[in-house]
Image 1 (cartoon, rainbow, N blue to C red):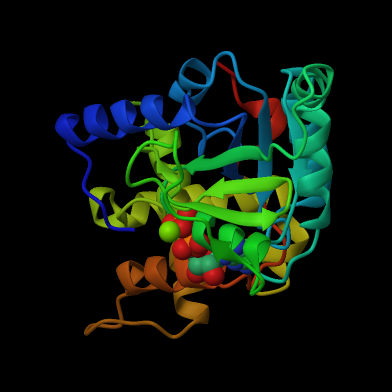
Image 2: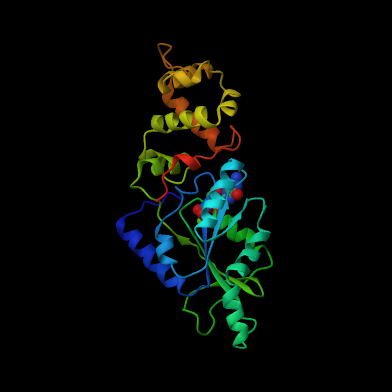
Length: 287
Ligand SMILES: Nc1nc2c(ncn2[C@@H]2O[C@H](COP(=O)(O)OP(=O)(O)O)[C@@H](O)[C@H]2O)c(=O)[nH]1
Ligand SMILES: [Mg+2]
């Protein structure tokens, strides 16, 4: 977290990943299920061009289930194996190994045909900051893991973690930079806390949040804040109204909408509105 990305960082991260990808059989791309598209870095598709890919939609406990289902289908149709997980409590983690074996089926068969047995599948995890890479690796590895260290034929300095006798993971995940070019993506990533929100106007984030909720998660929002005729009000009006409901006022009895914006973001990030997906499937143009 809190990495400032400069062009130099991106070049270095990309080069490192290109090196590491050569060492693995499968690339595990981690996305946040609330923002499957926004948390994606299209470079992965180029870097992992010829490798089997597993897409992990993580944090499913926070995302809208119907949306997650639709994104999963979309990603599958693109050619990846897709696994839905909650890396924090371990839900879905069992399916990761199955998916790895499935996408590496040909390789395993080729090895067998050549008489190569017991050669572990090797994988690496990649993703932008805060999608849950470390949590996922820790959960996958568990306590039984042992670092295998350097072995002959392995690039010096690379550490492999033995997950199972036939599955090894590169111990450091590949860190990808978020996409900054697209304003929509920037807002989505700031909402989930993946990029510094100071980079953006908090009020703008609050507006986005309110607009998303009144359009797609109205009941969940109205459970917390009572706003009459929410569809027909403008966003500033709604923000002021809920600020008053929260009794956040400045001197002169002015609603302190700046503070309310922070409250709103905190509540969202702490799951106070229930399961919410920010990347709405039908609304986003996929590139
Ligand atoms: N609710 C929820 N939180 C998660 C999940 N996976 C990770 N987190 C949280 O997300 C934050 C970032 O996770 P981390 O593993 O450090 O992300 P990394 O930057 O990609 O390594 C931490 O606070 C984790 O506890 C999940 O499946 N559900
Ligand atoms: Mg980490």
